[in-house]
Length: 573
Image (cartoon, rainbow, N blue to C red; front, side):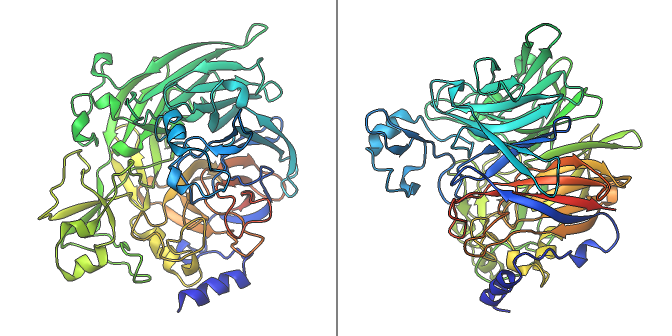
């Protein structure tokens, strides 16, 4: 069937929420209950947190149009009052307002930063009525620092909020602002210095400690260490106070980097500079945290009490000579295996969740994949000439393998791509993989009911557009006990939609549902680019709910405000 026909079919039934047969007819299902657009113009919603006591939901805004740079910070200049691109890949800034001298801007911007946030706001919504979410207000966090700031993550526990904030001057470490919603963004909030480029913040389940993943991506002129900050809170007095410690990945602090952790060759002697913590999940007893090290293709284990890294688990690769995938954006849906050369995907997980079954700990990861700046290379540079190479020639690969070793350009018997296009479950004690969804996600999207979303970009519905990159890019993940089952929800960043996996048997997880509420019709586009997932308590109508913020705003089919959106889904058993 022609891609145009498939695309038009989606537009004709844009609001439909079919359930995928490949995920089975038995088990928990999702039903879209409501949704709204962001109140911040030209902005999507990214990280979010729900406070069950107040029924408030908080979401960071990101100004992401899905096409521009990793971070495009717009602010009024003191001399002209115009909005300018402050930190960006300048050639990609499209606004006519970005007309200032680029060399001067480059001199102020010390390099690429990882966050995609560009407006320092936190939207507040009331979710007391799941069917009718109500906008409350927007919190301005710009006063956190004299330099431009960008919130990257938000967490909530016991009435407190914690927001991770990048200071976008290319040289300063990040911040975490902590306080009740009514003081956040003011001088009354607690402001804590943390590591460089904090990418994720979360509370321990008991609410006593805030953990921060400081990604520490390479900057222009220096490469900061990746680290994890532990902030211990004390609210027994009249004011909230804290003590702080930092978990590093240095040998001097007793950390051993095992073989199989992906450290770039130039950093083999100083691996702590190459480690990039991405996302944190904490066990229910608040004692242990698991931290994805995305670009390093590993998961670190942290003892919360001591704030020390106790173990690092290398994740290995997925072998596409044994598991089907689609490496080309030029031949439609074509899932196949490849062994000449062998293609292996480096898992590189983003989000992580933790759970236990019969007292045994596990963690689940969304194997998105992520390249460092300039790392991607087309497979055609291998200059091989086989029938299989015609399919894989456009595949983006890396010349650094899963062990951190340089890959010869030619002849190459094995090439390495970004991401595992899958969800995995691992033993929380040993780190061993006990389950991988293999080609289930791409197979699901290849079904006729979903092929319009097949490996599409997130800013524009364009089937097969991302096959040569990282495919559907599973990114958001939530592990939660619902309907008496251990569920794992997985959000597909590019294709859109949320999958539901029953992981009650962690070694044989089963997909029970997939719902894609994405709409790309002109003037009513919504629900593109899901990033995170939050669990909401149930009621008489549904066992529980999930809220999903969507990061894409300002794309060509968006409403006049250019805003992103969120949706609330009810869970039926």
